[in-house]
Image 1 (cartoon, helix red, strand yellow):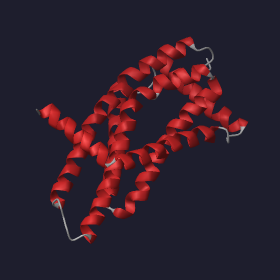
Image 2: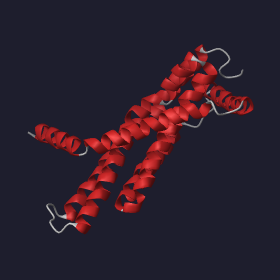
Image 3: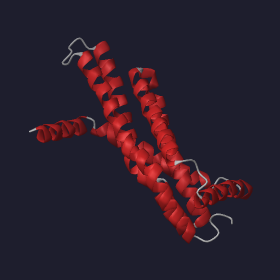
Amino acid sequence: MRKQSLKTVINKHMKEHSSIYVFITVLFLMGVVFGAILVNTLNVEQKQDLFFYLQRFFGQVVAGEVIGQNEIFIESFLQNLKYIALMWLLGISIVGLPIVMILLFLKGMVVGFTIGFLVNQMGFSGFMLSFASIMPQNFFIIPIYIVMGTVAISFALQMVKHQFQRRIHEPFATIFMRYCFLLLLLSISILPASALEAYISPILMRQLLELVPNSTGI
């Protein structure tokens, strides 16, 4: 019964906010495309400088000189938690809606730029390396960001309705408590993504870097 009721709640939520989900997803994908295109605007010297630092990082990964996995886990969790918490806070403020959209666009742009730069410099090997280093955790993180962004926008719009409409179908306190519970749920959902980034991605990166010639500059 609980599984059926949860499924019903999720389906209802998706139907009621489908238009916002589509908008947010398209906005994120536009950020990915823009980030990939941005790579082509860099001149040769800028690309060489970036790739030089990237090679140094790759060399540290292969040599096992990067910070400990536990530190990576904590840093990743706190960083992502701050990001969704910021979107949550912006959802409380109506004027924060554009900033929520900008944050989602920037997240897509960072992903697109990273993948685009690696592919531009290393070809198919760069694509495989980006798939191993950033995609495992982003399979979890990206949906979390999209859900948080959608709910933040929806909550702000509901605040507007409660301010200007006399007929209130649901107490505002109930809506706010549900909004708080979602933040807690998404915060817990970050844990698997941080675990992948800390304990799985470095291993995959190290194995791929050992197979890719000249990727570490050593």
